[in-house]
Length: 207
Image (cartoon, rainbow, N blue to C red; front, side, top):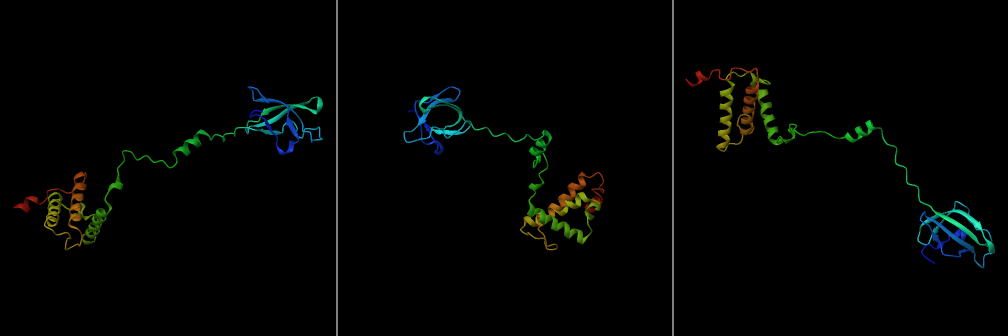
């Protein structure tokens, strides 16, 4: 026998194949079976629709059977191809688009505020807080002659740092943080459409 021999399941023991199984191109097998000598039953213990497994492991379903002489049965087996699982129902197009875009945020070409160095920024905020307590919040916006005054203040802090002094003795804050504040003030006022006279009092200062 070939690897298409019928390996009977437990329920059909007592019956044996009488000839070589013939497998057609359509996946159908024709086979003659008969009771074994020690089997007194003449009824094949499977019915149309039941499945049997061949020697090679392929599963076939009993399609039809016909009784022959000498208690033989001519049977036709059709390969039982498992039904393919049905795909899940397709979501509506709009819901699918929402699901595909969930959790997406487009940050390309946007300002990278996350690049600010937090330790340095925290020190600058400390200087701003000190200044707000000493003068008033946003007092720096109203300083006339801000251009030369903040330039001079920034340079004083930079020179002190350059000469080795890290901390401003009055505020207890880093000299560079003070310089950054001065440059931020100057930048803000320089870009503002409404600002005090940037050079007010400069001529009197240099006389």
